[in-house]
Image (cartoon, rainbow, N blue to C red; front, side, top):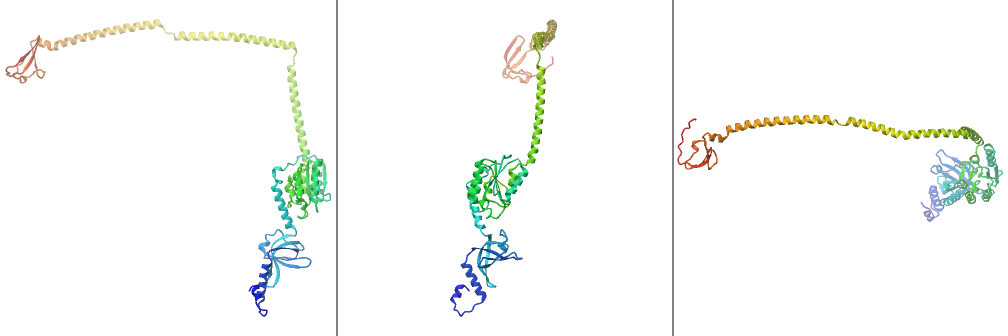
Length: 455
């Protein structure tokens, strides 16, 4: 049943309490969207389930609240009795008991949300302008001749910083530029002290510090005027504001951020014990260097003293040196001639050894010529005798000699071959007859073969 249906019913209608509470709850959720509500915490309880139950109140009224575990686990803090807080909640009703309550989705301390949002806006603006850029950060001096402190004279942080500086670097003068660190218009006064320190040029590094506190207490260090003064400072600035977990705009604008004021004092002050130890080391190194320099100078002086002689002795040394040079020059002039003669003798000796013996070779050549002539003559005689023998044998075997003994040779005129058998003779066949003193052509009239007779 909806609220509209309830309003349409007559006054005599009867409805259950649960229906009424459900209708009222729906109407409340539609009529009151998520809203921020501020008040003081009372009756805070954290159930075993993780849900938070508490009430917020002011001088005239109070309201019960519930924050379920799914939302409570993301809260930045757990409220305590008497805390001033702001809750982002939906107005609803706990139907079983018909009690009005706030269903809380987020919680923050009173005023913290607005300040934090202002902090984020200013941080983003200055960062976009390059005030926090790493390249503009300046290095701290290793041995400052003076240290400046911008803080309140009544601040506990000032005592901590002075104590640390007196312990670490009692030889370095300290100048305090007093300015309030909490309250209205404090940022302007702090910025004025930063500018005054730059104008007076009494120190080499500047500390801007104060002790811890809430965001409202530290708000002066989140003001734009102080951030711009720190960024424009020609002196390196160390920011030591609050505790280690506290961050302010001044921390981002400063050249170095220290987690605490004491840490800021340690960053800017060289430790006296270490300086004295380094001084001793350098003094010893300087003494060793001076001693080595004196030793080298004494050695150089001895060398120069040995070189310092009288003019007569110098002339005698130069004469002796001149005679030595003359002797070396004469020896150097004679040496090439001597070397050339020795080389010529060596070459002549080698030439004599390599020179051929012409007479011996000529006699040997004559003997060889005689041997060749004799061998040639003997060979000619042998060949002549062989030719005579072959000529005699040829005369014996010559066909002409055979013809001279009365024989004749018959040659077939047609085939040009010798006739050897009687059956080769044919009547009327021309023949050529070769005799010892000529030849004749004959024509056979008749052929009568017969058995051959042996001669």
